[in-house]
Image (tube, rainbow, N blue to C red):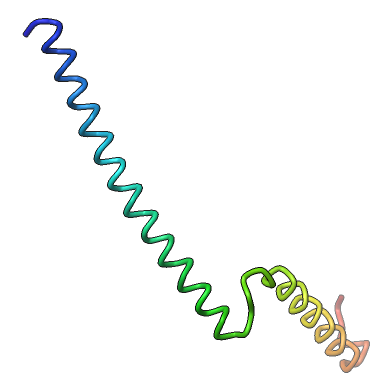
Amino acid sequence: MDDNERVLALLKEDLERAKTMKVKAETRLEQLQKQRDELIKELAELGIEPEQLDDEIKRLQNEIDMLIKQARELLPPDLLKH
């Protein structure tokens, strides 16, 4: 096999590898898009727009903090370790 044939064979291998990578990337992109759509649907069922997600997380964290504080206030001080 001369140099040109070897170079062409290597290029053909590289092209096949690139095609395989492209197919894998397209498949992964499709999976991620489906996952995103499912998450958006779940958020809509909860009445939350994707743009509001950060605010909703903060609101829920504040609610959790408040409930923990209330629970601690209801327990006798001698039972609290922290």
